[in-house]
Image (cartoon, rainbow, N blue to C red; front, top):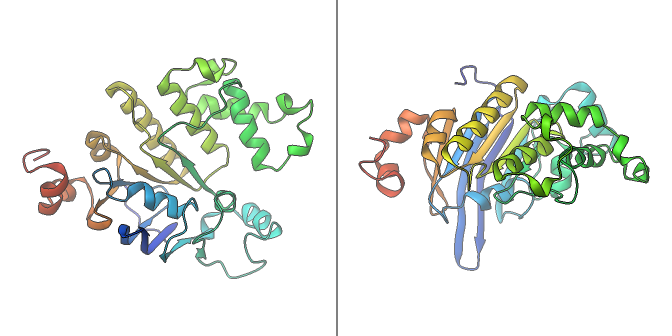
Length: 280
């Protein structure tokens, strides 16, 4: 569990997004810190994925702000981003407003994302999938012709061993089991060296054992690499066991925040989501 209260890595402030007459996200506010695992839960249609999409630029919010703290970056990372125009040069390190930025620009700042449906290159090997992300992250597309298989091979293998796929590096992605595809997607997200990782229902479609294996892996990576994790999930066992902090959405609004014990006993959460008897 997180004990030291550091400055927020991500601050979501009064976020709102509507579709026609439906207010999907209504004044959502929360923080995520380095090394902290935060779960965003709620019934289908509560606004979880829309919130994610507003954070990483898939959707522009109608109002509110998303702030990212570059103080979490190393000096070398900040210099690179200053040279690329993503951060002001020699400026005071302060939270950066990333509201409405393009997803690729947000990713460059150190915010990664995995999706409900895995996004991999099925015609490539497991190793090549990770290499492609490393090549893109370093903007080396011009060197692809004839050299792609040689670029960042060791780095790709190290990431695959991190997620337990080292022995399957040369398999074609199309032949992987679903749980292994999820682990490959995690390796691809880690290839961008994120400080914050957004995971939208990472264990969807998995069996009980696979879910626990993946969440233990994510928990270990978050603590070892000291990165923030924000994830949505319907499996309450995974949420209560692995999340340091839980945010509950209901009809686009935050109705509760707290640790597992506080959320389990929260009257409104039990009424609208957990059920009065469940997890009592």
